[in-house]
Image (cartoon, rainbow, N blue to C red; front, side, top):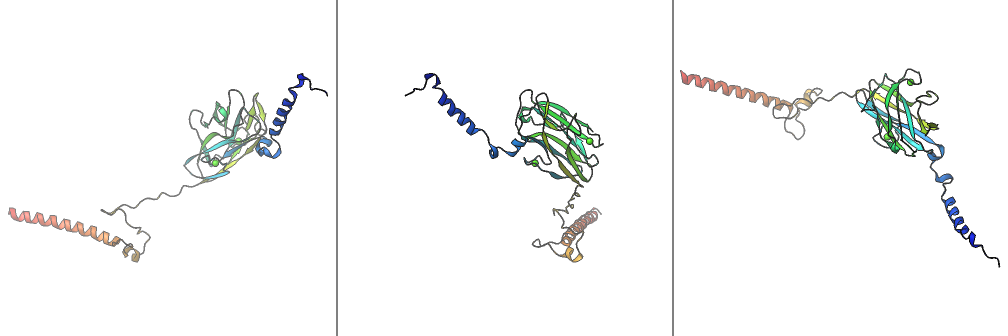
Length: 265
Ligand SMILES: [Ca+2]
Ligand SMILES: [Ca+2]
């Protein structure tokens, strides 16, 4: 009977390790769709929650934030750059901090470039440019990469459009590997709907010790004279009481003055 040479004793053990490694290798459906299709960058119209919101409603005059998110990183990347185009008849860019936008240091990207407002694709609409990268190495981190502040300056809808590399090779939106090598990156836009702010509610002034009058402006004469349920007092009662007290005080003062004058005579 042939015996297994001692110098090949390691072979069965190695075969077991290779089998285990192949079994653990991600196949087909076990890999998230984003990981198979590459990288993706999206604008989140409402960064107060982690889901990507395609739109948000804001009021004229109120500053608000949006975020740029890396939403898929199937290919490890070292950094990214983005140009968000907006309609400046509806939105204005609001600088924040020393970089004018706030970088989140997602994936340890800390080489930040100050934001730049320009028109890199030449369509006259302004674009906010920003970029960030790791000092070395790559990452597959996903999430918010930066926060950009705007303010509604007029009613209407403005797209927040990520300018593509084709439309602006110098500043177009993309993730990048060391080199830099621009990586295929899907881009997802958002939109902001600006509305006029609702009118401010001005509280009615109080009367005497009564904190607040019921709304009489639009009330009928019958409603105005009807006591509010459970209070026992109508506005007319309150006004009459105020007037009565004022008259009583006046009469008392007048009486005291007259009596003092009579004593002095
Ligand atoms: Ca969100
Ligand atoms: Ca533009």
